[in-house]
Amino acid sequence: MSNKSSKIELYIPLLTIIVDAIAIFAAFLFSYYIRFDFAPFAKLFPVTKGVPEPVGYIEFALIIIPIWLLVFHSRKMYRIRRNVFVLDELFVIIKCVTIGMLFAMGLVFLLKGDFPYSRLVFALIWINSIILITIGRYFTLKFEKNLYNKGVGLNKAAILGTNEMAENIYERFSKDKFTGYDVLGYFDYEHSGENFIEGKLRLGELKDIPDKIRELNIDKIFISIPSSRHDILEELFRICEGINIEFMYTPDFVDMITSRLKIEEVDGIPFMKLKKIPMNAWNRLMKRTFDIVFSLLFIFILSPVLLIISILVKATSKTPLFSRQERVGLDGNKFMILKFRSMRVDAEKGRSANGQER
Image (tube, rainbow, N blue to C red):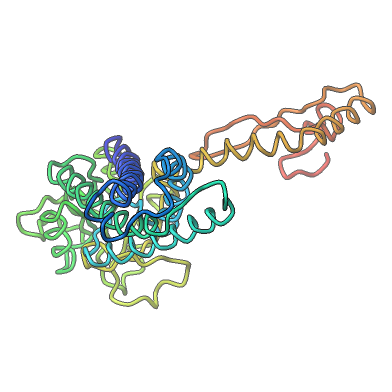
C-alpha cells in the first residue's frame, strides 16, 4: 500500500472523529444557550428552577463525547470511502445519537444530585447533535471526495481479465475516483500479446503480475475471468505467494469457492475478497493503542504475581531469571521475547529441528 493511501486511511477517520467531537460539544453549548439565554424560547418554556452554570454541561459533555464516539465506531461510522446515501447516513446518525443519549441519561441518573440537568436541554442536545453531526459529516465527505478527485490517497489497482466485466470495472473505476482506486492497467491470460481492451494499458500476462506488483506498487488486483478457469486462480495464488497484495474477484457464481470469503461491493459491482491485508493504517493504530494500554494495565494488575514468580525462580535456581527466545512476526520480521525461565540454560540447543530430543 502506498504511503499516501496509508496516510489517507489514517487521517480521514481521525478527521471525522475530530469533527464529530466538535459537533457534539457544540450541540451541548448551543442547547444550553437556547434553553437559558435565547429569549423567544424562554418565553415559551419559562425557567422556574434557576439557571445552572454552563461549566456543569461543559464537564458533562467532555465525559460523554468519548462514549458517543465509541458508539459511532461500533456502527462502523469511521471507515473511509463510505459511499452511502444521505438518508441512510442520517438514519445511522439518528440511531447512534439516540443510543448515546440513553448512555447520557443513565449517567445523569448515577450522578443524580451532583448534576442539575434540564430535560429540555437534553431534548435539544439530541436534536442539535443530529443536525450538527450530519452537517460536519457532509463537509468531511466533500473534503474526502475532493482529495480523491485530485488523485490524493488512491490505492493503485490493476485488473486481471479481458471480458466485458473487466472492461466495465476499468471504465467505472476510472471515472469514479471515490471508489478509491487508480487503475493502472490490465493483465490478460491468453499469451497473445494483443491489446484486448481498446484504449486501455496492457500491463502484461499472468506471469508478469509479481514483477509488476513490485515495480508499480500495486495494492489490489480485481479479477474478472470465467469461473471455469480455476487454473488461472491457482496459478495466480502460486506466483503471488508471500507478496503483500489483495485480490478481489467478481464471480459468475460462487460454487467454485469453498473457503471462507467476504463479499464486498464497490461502486455497485460485487466482488469476492479472496485474500485480505489484515489491517489498514487506522486499524493498526487502534490495535497498537489497545495493545499498549491493556498490556500496561495487566502488568500493573499482575505485578504482585510476577514478583512472587521471580522470587521462586531465583530461590530454586542460580540461572538467569529470564530467557530470551526468537519469534517471527508480521512480514517475517524476527523479534525477541522475554519469558520466565522454565528450562535449564541452553536447553533448546539439545533439540532437533522437529523439537525432539537428540
